[in-house]
Image (cartoon, rainbow, N blue to C red; front, side, top):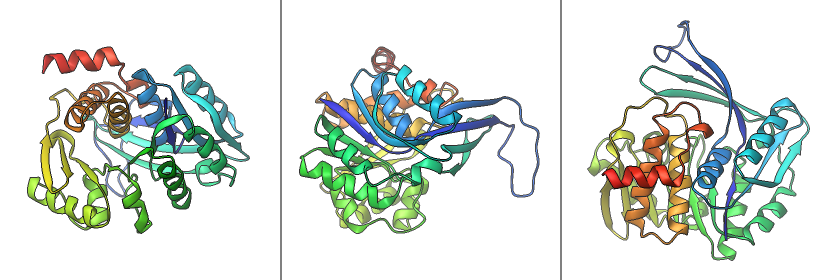
Length: 305
């Protein structure tokens, strides 16, 4: 069985700079690269790099970026049978990465927000051959919600990455449809009004999400690890100490790896550790999809812990 990913496909335009500029500030950057990205595509590549068959459902434009994005996904062995080509521009992300590896991102959604209704037929077809579904929020919320319903009708596991941080309330039923929700600190604040600055506040935020119907809550706190909350219990899953070079796709790598680990039958604490190791390797490399590790690399890092 495969993993299905329904989400965004973007071209990332990345510039490195000494620091993240403040409003009104112009600074001189250094390296500039154009690389494939998008949360959906990144998660699909992360899972494929770890050895599982992956169906990606999404859309690109009929421009040059769209052609490049399709070819790149093929090169990573991601099935793109269900990727639409929409008239107009592909999605683009403008990314600044500073010398500490931190980043800011602005996305022009392009084709990601112009999918045709037929995309839901594609979702259904992909789910018929899948064991789990990964979702994010760079595509229309109503399509995300319908995709989650389609997955639950087939008794599939749903992993929701509520990223980027929601600018409007999520559909209330989406929380209950997701088996696992994985917000980072900014997304947790946006969803709950609570900043998870320590273990206690993270647990309080998780409880808010549980009250809305979420089953497993995994709050990603960067170098502080994750807080996993389920059935009234919280557990801290530590991260790995590594020299961070680029954190752009760390969260996407984490979710893709988590889906793979659970697909392989790992228990949740073990799966979370596997995901943490995958993301730790990713942040030591530049780029989004090019930073995703293979299974041998992840197992090697776990063996050193």
